[in-house]
Image 1 (cartoon, rainbow, N blue to C red):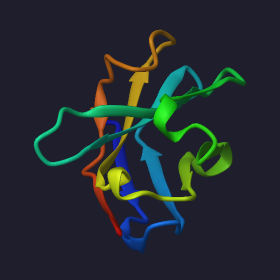
Image 2: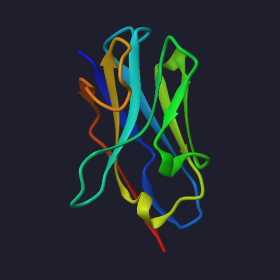
Image 3: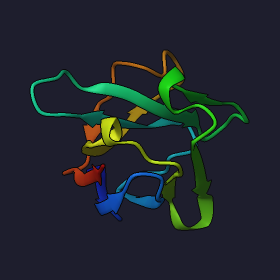
Image 4: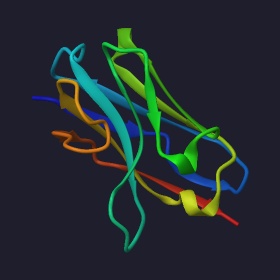
Length: 122
């Protein structure tokens, strides 16, 4: 069974940085797409960033381009989201997600972590 465990959230001042981690287990992920999503109170879940284990490309929603970086440590089956220049509007629960195969990176994920809270104060 695929399991995703996020960590690294917390409270940070605007302009600060956080690094989120997602440890994936239960499968060989070489054929998977991995992503980060976030959900703020009263809002729908929003795509943030993604990559495919087998590819080189990364994908970001426009609002985080230039500030967030998704990366991996394949040996550890770990995905990271480095978040710099954080803004109050980045406040949300951040979720790690995975899906088998290669397809659209913004939707249709099969597995989700429990989420980690990121709060950015003004």
